[in-house]
Length: 367
Ligand SMILES: Cc1cc2nc3c(=O)[nH]c(=O)nc-3n(C[C@H](O)[C@H](O)[C@H](O)COP(=O)(O)O)c2cc1C
Image 1 (spheres, protein in one colour):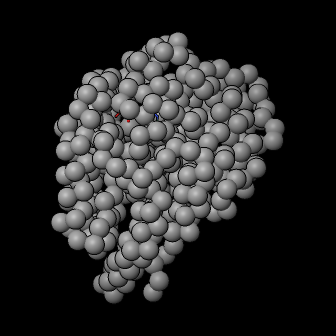
Image 2 (cartoon, rainbow, N blue to C red; image 1 turned 90 degrees about the vertical axis):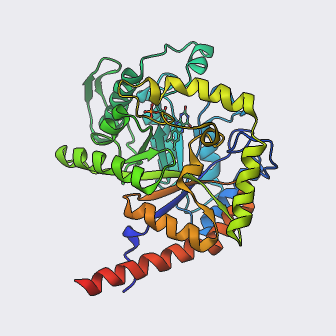
């Protein structure tokens, strides 16, 4: 029996809308943050079988991403260049407020046949907030604000005469017209700390986490899904990974070794210093980057830890291991985006589908 479409693991790629690529290294990266490069990449990705693209929001960067195009405008441009790909635009509370975000995303959803989603990020870089004159909140306060942001978005999108009395946001009998088409834009969130997980188990459609082993992902998933169940909430999980897929494992490992050997130590250490404002600063000290080594930080969302480094078959098998651990989506970064997204679509995704089908058939036979 064919594997049910809805059970198939989904694939997303990081939109390189900031300069410098996805690794903090002087290794050659054939990538580019221009509109032309990104439009073509989005078209390649949708043909290759990718479901989503994720744009990034940065107002400044301390680790080499010197130029950063704004996420919502850039996402809209990619939507205009594609027909099936969904694009997830990062939104940062502080610079954005929910009234603007709700209206902006409702209009983009209307213009693009419902293909826009958002990634509500909570901020990790104090220097960025300082540079743009935004008040810097403590770690868990940032998540309290993000949760109010998400509740406001949903309220505005679904209710007429929406009234909300939060500590950060207030609405008084507000009616957004027109509302976004259904299904509503999906709401992703990034972060792995306890506050991030608790928010995911209450309000987000998707929980995005840094790269990790299947065992560590399973721990997060079990925690979130148990809490979500208690809250009668449904949430899916996306896991970050940096993929290096080559014909032989030795080749792939050699590329990883070169990425790390050519890392820019000052930029990696500056990034490592800044992220202490994130997961490590959470009361329980469990969030993103709480345990990251220098080598991990060379990919700024711990993407090497997911170990999608090897031959197409090895990588496909490891993706299925992550799926067994509870991942619903794999978010991917690459060195040479256009070439490697195409290669991944040709050589890895079909193998993942084969493995998923075999697993579904085996479990049906066992029933
Ligand atoms: C997949 C993913 C994408 C993210 N994208 C952004 C982004 O574009 N801009 C940003 O400021 N933070 C981004 N973040 C950072 C998170 O919002 C959060 O601040 C960080 O992961 C620390 O969270 P924690 O302390 O709860 O673990 C992203 C995180 C993840 C996992």
